[in-house]
Image (cartoon, rainbow, N blue to C red):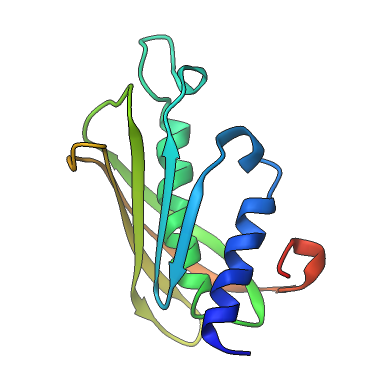
Length: 144
């Protein structure tokens, strides 16, 4: 299988995940990199009228995760740890997350990600460690 086919299968798998029915994200995956974006909706807000931190985490983790899984063609990777930094609130426009792999070894991958708002301002940043699972990338996961 070519890498390009692997990236498109990962994108289909991501978009097929039930949680993404709620957020309707867009994703683009290339070698060691992933971009995820979501249009902000009022139902994503906490009581103070801005996007809840859970969505920040989701975008940061998704972008870093798929940057890593772009390098692993046989199994699903797992998030081991993830740290994030909230820099500013957001309540309109779109959130654009970019993830990239910064370190890889035979057992552990480290990736960074950040989120920009529609004006290009950084609103959050994160980094995590990831490892290979024993879950094969197969059509039952949406990897088709």
